[in-house]
Length: 269
Length: 261
Image 1 (tube, one colour):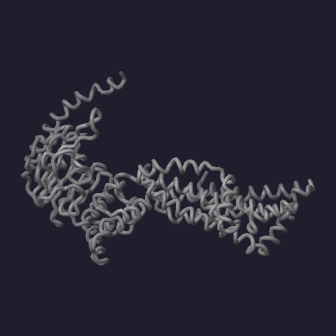
Image 2 (cartoon, rainbow over the protein chains, first blue to last red):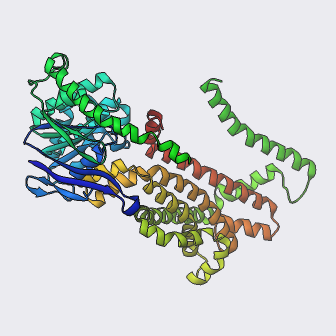
């Protein structure tokens, strides 16, 4: 349903050019949950922005149901890492979720129903008339997820959505996303730097190299569903897979560390 | 110091300081007996005679209307121009030198030409004059406010394909509102200055006109009464504006308190 073919992205031109993504290809099946992991600074966000149609790739293409993505497609929603910056602090949770529906051709009643259903799905019914900043970080990210759900996407892109919440909240939010995937039948492309998270959530893991980014490995995750924070993580396959991904990424990071080390010295000279 | 004690002290200072100044004025003027500096009791008597409310309709109402209309036009124009300029770097590059030029113009320099251009020393010229100089604080603050909008919010709007007019109405204007309101507050105090200036220069009515006429006819009581009124007018308008700001920016205070900046 979503295909990424030989995508590349270079920022700037000439001597100032920075090659962020060299060549990335993979595909997502319908209702599949795919996590993208990679060493830090490997262009995960750039990749996601290209997929979302927010950035124009320098080469290659993104195909959504066979059609090329050149601008943000209506069946795709994006959840950012910075919930406090993607939500509007001047208005209620309800209006935040309503935002992407205002310009859709819907009756007032349908709009209201969609908003309330989405807010119910993330368990925030009681806070519908609160301002986002009156809620905790995890709850604010739930608002952002509800807003994406209300938009009725067939694909949800998530850019390190739980990177700035505490571990316990993160577990709850992971389970919420799995629940929502089943309830709403959506395909999810989830970018994270947390290896445990990627193994726990996904059907397949895409491991990226450091920049300029290429696909290092695509790993199927055979863990049984429904997943459970305790039982799934006790399974030997979970540990094996986790260790495998760790090794892949660690091997990526070592040469990068060697490349980065002389930089401060060069700056001084 | 406790919060309550501090608030008490702040209010006491706000009330006590002017009373002390007025008392000192009265004591000094009784003793000095100088005709240029009438006693407080004389000024207050004149104040009552003039402004409560014999001349109120004739001179205070026109001044207030001019401030209101000039300020209103400045706010509307400032926001209407500031939003596109804030959004477009190219438009900004074209417009900024002109804005900087006119902004640097001392207001009295434009008084004569405003009369010549508009063939008028009545409301039309006064309002245009006030509006012109009140425009800049609103305009520049709107531009800054619009430019400072969080890129994540813009990406959010783009990814949800929110149309341009909705984006401006639902995201850009509310996000810039704290800055716009700050500009409006500067403009409002500027409006009082411009009103007095324009009326003092050439007019047939208004508080500034009364100030000029009483000075020219050596009526020091009414002159001081006019000065007192102008001060109170500026103070009162600012107070009203703070109430307005408290209402429209309630979210902003809550948000700032909740978010580590």
